[in-house]
Amino acid sequence: MSAAPGSESPRYDAVVIGAGHNGLVHASYLARAGMKTLLLEQRHLVGGAAITEELLPGFQFTTFSYAISLLRPEIVDDLDLVEHGLMVLPLANTFQPGLDGEHLLLGPDADANYHEIARFSAEDAEAARDLDHLIARLCVALKPWMDRIPPNSRSDDPAELASLAELRAFMDGLDPEVRALGEQFATSSAADILDGTFEHDLVKALYASSGIIGSMVSPRDRESGLIWLFHKMGEYDGSPGSWGFHKGGNGGFTQVLARSCEAFGGEIRTEARVERVVHEGGVVRGVELAGGERIEAPVVVSALDPRQTFTRLVDAGDMPADLIEHLEGYKYQGSASKVNFALSALPTFPGLEDRADLFRGFTNLGPSMDYLHQAFTEAKEGRFSRRPFIDCCIQSTVDPEMSPPGKHVMSCFVMYTPYKLAEGTWDDQREALGDTVQETLEEFFPGFSELVLHREVVTPLDIERTVGLSEGNIFAGELFDSQLFLSRPAPGWNQYRTPISGYYQCGSGTHPGGCVSGGPGMLAARQVLGDVQKGA
Ligand SMILES: Cc1cc2nc3c(=O)[nH]c(=O)nc-3n(C[C@H](O)[C@H](O)[C@H](O)COP(=O)(O)OP(=O)(O)OC[C@H]3O[C@@H](n4cnc5c(N)ncnc54)[C@H](O)[C@@H]3O)c2cc1C
Image (cartoon, rainbow, N blue to C red; front, top):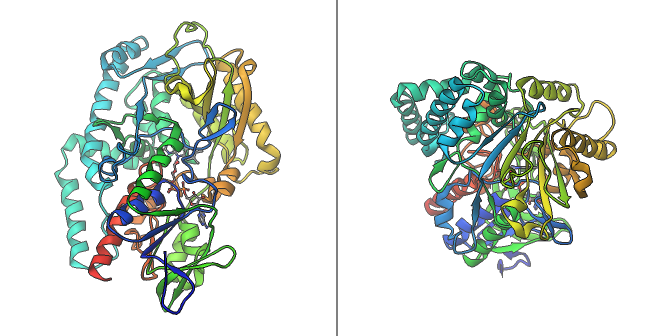
């Protein structure tokens, strides 16, 4: 740390605000490039929405996010993450129980999956195989656009015009079958696609869950098509669409990122809340912390969401009016909660009591399209779903060190739980939500409640209060087409810069969007380093 001549303030080449996983990735890249980089985090720990906390002795809770798929492979290599402890444990199963005793149990063996689905419908088994293959082809084709700075549709710079022309040529050059599926995802609801593909409701509902995760949409809403595709864009070890748990939970992952950042020389300061970004004459000067401390830097990067970046850390009045107007219409509308349990033993599903591997992956509690739609309808009216969709996993089955021997930790991602309740507040309703989730689990797994040693309920309001994600939106803004790619977070401001020279954005509200991907942190670093090199 050094002081500017004639000033008391410490000075860095770059200050990054917010040590969520994107802030960590970003700061690592800048430090790796030789910039003297300081990462400031308001909380006592790094990780943001990707943390692990021991809430009961021996039980490691992934308070918020719990699984990994979209992590950009380039980051693993660039930041030496394996050397720093990266360990993604692949998931063995996806379990979809019905309320009538039926179930689907799918795993990594495509042939076994075929036969499992064929128990319900041979046509569906065939269709699932074809659809999975076509989706994988589409994702592989789209991947390069996930991993590059998107074109600026508002610029007449020849490089941007060339990039837009490249995008059009790419679309035109896609294999017709792959392109048709891409267009379907962009224009149809998950339900429309599924109704045209499958017969059996349990199969449809399993696929539909990817189209609603973290979003205030029914699988019958048009936006669910694109959200489904987004959740398929991940991979692990070259296997498209696969998901895993990081050793020690997602907090284990962000600790790996912190070690990488520090190994490159990045400095991380916790309990350092940034109150405002200091700028003068349209040029950034540094930041001011709560308590008044000032830190100077010619580059300041916000890893917070667009509302925080453009209207809290700086005055909205200092931003162009059209940008602020656009951001006022940017949708957050958080819809998800988390209920985490410490369990004395594994739950059981009637008829599958002897399947110890049942929970070695995701368990989807949303057995029909009507069930999912009904859960949404209640939330649209401002109430949390009385029979919620729950995506759960028992991470201790894959990573036994997450709990004491023989005991377990269970993560339940719960939808729909609207940020804005029609009646009451989340502070009043928190435990009622916990009870509803527990009752729903009891319906699928009789005797569940007797296993509960401890319960943690995290509502959208808690997400906002703790991590700062506005309205508790887990992605820092809905993954709607109007808020992705050329428009994330706003047309013309989708390339990580802001209207203040030297002030950048690198959080999930930028391309490619939310989830534990690190993509925004990485691509923003590319932009910052390019600008620094050019002396911009
Ligand atoms: C309940 C839940 C479950 C999820 N499940 C999954 C999942 O299983 N898999 C997946 O891929 N994604 C999941 N997600 C989404 C994913 O976790 C997020 O999209 C992602 O972690 C956001 O990362 P980020 O770095 O962009 O921002 P954040 O994680 O929000 O980090 C922002 C950081 O900035 C800090 N901060 C805020 N204000 C200030 C300030 N003024 N000064 C200094 N620091 C500040 C915050 O404390 C925080 O550490 C989930 C999210 C939630 C909430």
